[in-house]
Amino acid sequence: MEASQSNIVLVMEGRDSARAIIPFAANRWPGRQVLLVYTRSLALLEFRYPDGLTEADYPYVGEPAWKLSDSEWATSDFVVELLNGELVKTDLDPFQVIKSAGEIWFAAHPGFSGAHSFEVLLTHCLGADEATRERPALILTAKWESKITRVVDTTTTEDPKYRQWSAKGRARQFFNYNFDLNSEALLTESLRKVGVDVSEFRINEYSLQFLYWLRRQPTLSEGENSTEVKKWVGSGRYQIKLRNMGLLAFQDRLAVITDRGKEFLNLLHPDCEDPDREARHKAWAADWPNSKEQMGAYLRTFFGKQLHYTPAAR
Image 1: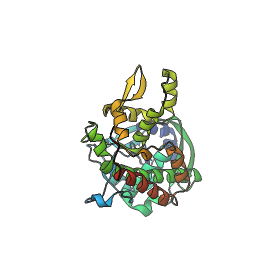
Image 2: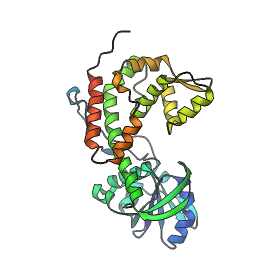
Image 3: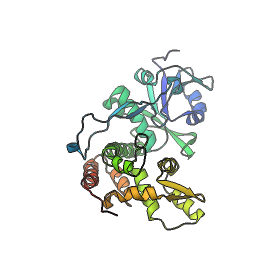
Image 4: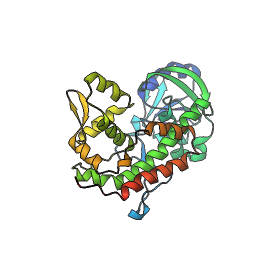
């Protein structure tokens, strides 16, 4: 099939969200071709790090860049057409659909992850200027993050609510890009020393601070453990990753740090533990882009201490 140059392109998270907007889209654009491009939390793209960095370049702080994901993916999984009230798979390339779109709408998750995915995809396809210009938007409602229920409003990407999501997404993107790059260079050796397969695993900021949090916890009952862990939004996938690395285990259904996990943390500079991480991220997001300098200083200090740290013999 071909994409019409007068089409409507809705950028969304995935099929669950798409089902919820079918009635709205059918009534809003009768007779128009409506294509949905799924971001799937941006499975299409991944960070592109600079080549040729040497030890003297670390700690490194730079602007995020993106490339096509190295993982295998089929374009038919990312573009569907809304046809006669049904979602129909297509063989269209998602990048070409964005590039040739007649009208592009934000319709992703109502939050920073949705705004982040939308802007990264448009930047990759159309350039930074086009990605940041005002575009129409559907504001969706959700019972929970993965369950969009209906369209509640139409607005634009200049809406204060969207701008707040965008700022938070860009701040997180800047921090995660630089943390992950430095982590691979400066924390991976400590993982290797405690027996983690570093060809398969790396540790990001969230996983690291979650591990520190577990070490700080007293012995909790099952109910207390479950309640406290849930405060770490989205921690489920990080628990699985840390378990596969051997840094976390489940004992009587309780998440606990393992001896390997404790050994790993003991190889890090004590100031790598940051119990105030969430408050920092909120402040940085609220002051983006002015906070970029503060974030850079934090990252240079954090990894600079680790770069020159020699743990005491135990």
